Image (cartoon, rainbow, N blue to C red; front, side, top):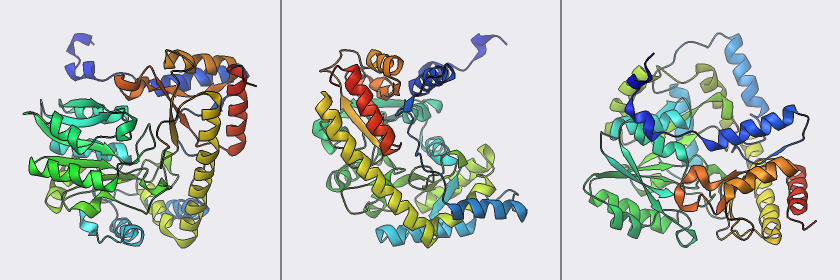
Length: 389
């Protein structure tokens, strides 16, 4: 094939450095090194027993055919009930579209809303794939530098200041990857009101919303029926490899997204959908809450230890399982630092390089989605690397 025939949009999509670091760590493990993985954002917990049993039962019962492109009616109803139980919200099952992971949900939302040349505002730092979903439909992500004062999120003032003639909407994440910080409900309300006044769209990625530690449960869906929310079974529900997520859409957008889903995906995995019904069983929910408490314990251990080692944590993460730490007192190049740490003491972390240029050199992201024993050993190794053992 003549590579000159490749689509020009590929020029706007760069490799995912997190995965490159993961390959480096895997290569060291193949050499016999013991590596503590704090790079990839994946829970160390796996699906609960009832979910595994439901998947096995679905396979043995032959429930492996295509489902509706919008998902199993029973699963859409179960997600609706979850919103009522957790947030006190009445979300009609008809507004819920089950997807092949949150990535497919974002892809479908961007396919429906982003045209060539359309601009979408998002914070720098933010999850890199979000800007690439926009680029995949020939739109443009406008990355707005955001720091500790804004909790690494967009503010209403920033949205007003940066909204331009080509701006069509905002893409937010609360809690965020890489920072683990949420947008305050009062600020999110102002952002949504501003976007609404400009006839734009608001997409809110809530895949870590179930892992919020310091506030009452809150969803952007409480702020209006015109909000588009992304969620997933990967993080809180510990089903990363099952590739299952969902969208909550304004009612009038559902037929359009269904049409796209029919053509792009046909449906999400039927086995994963049948299994996910068991996520909402009482025993499963109790297990998820105990695991959430364990994540909080890990955060409460790791943050003070990092500060004691010389890292700065200007905003304490209130959700997800990440710490976004300022390493400028230790190095002038975060990417070089994480590679040195990996090679010398076997702790895998990632720099801010993936998440946008504003924090690329100064910050590292650490995932505490690993055992407390691993975190304690990682702190010991970091102290050794920094000469503070």
